[in-house]
Each structure stands twice: as structure tokens, then as C-alpha cells.
Image (cartoon, rainbow, N blue to C red; front, top):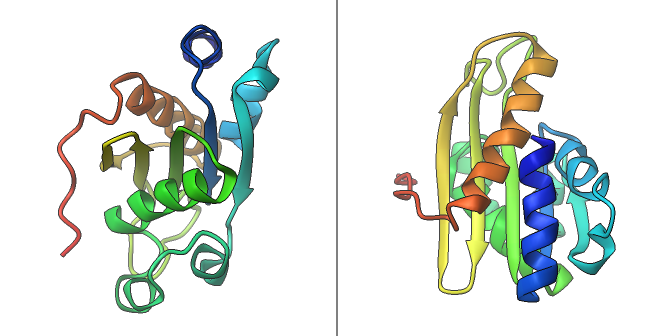
Length: 162
């Protein structure tokens, strides 16, 4: 994970792009992974830890009707979170995490169901993950997968929202 965070900071510095993150189930772990890299301040614009569903709508601009209909654990929510944080913090790239880390299901969604979102110039997407393990393992793997999605430039088939 630290290698991917280092690559993000190095690439952002060399290529002149910035990144912002919106986190739910990871609760700041993605931001911490990026900011643990020396020189991150040249690339990292900031983060929003939108743990509560209403914050996803009021701060990040996620469609409130979508949240009411589908809940916070949904691919379109992850995509909109990434777009929202990118716009809110004026970054070139936005990354987002939402899902269920456990120990119990949330809104009928099983533990380990996670979505990571990406928003960049000309592309936005969400990827579904089905992760196993304890809460901290799921959260750590989510951070890794969000960084991998950045590395692919969001070049991942979008998960249909409906």
C-alpha cells in the first residue's frame, strides 16, 4: 500500500496533478496513507470523512434521492463521492470509499461489500469489491484497492447503479 501511495505522490509531483479523497468506511485511512509520504503536500488537497449518510449529500453533493433509495453502500454513491470531493477541494483526481467493514451488515448490505470511486479528467467510475476478513483487514484492503483504482486511472468498467 505504501508503495502505491508513494507512486501517487511522486507522479502527482512530476506530472503536476492534485488529489482529494472522500472516505466513509475507511474513516481517514486513505488520506493517512497518502499523507504519510514525504512531499505529499505538493499533491494532496485534502479529504472529507463523510461517515454519516447525510454528510455525503450535504457536503459532497451525492444525490439525496439516490441515498434514500439505495443507501450509502452503492456504486453510484462512490462515484458521486469521488466527483464531489474533486469539485469541492479543487483537485484533479478524486478518490472515494464506501461500504460495510463490519462487524455486522448495514442497511441489508453484507460485511465486505465495498465500492471505491474514481473521478479524474474525462472519466469517473466505481468498482465493486467483495472483501473477506475482520473489520481492519477490510478497511486496509479498501485503501489498497482505491490506490490501485487511481493507478489504473479509473480505467475500470463502471458498475451499473440501477
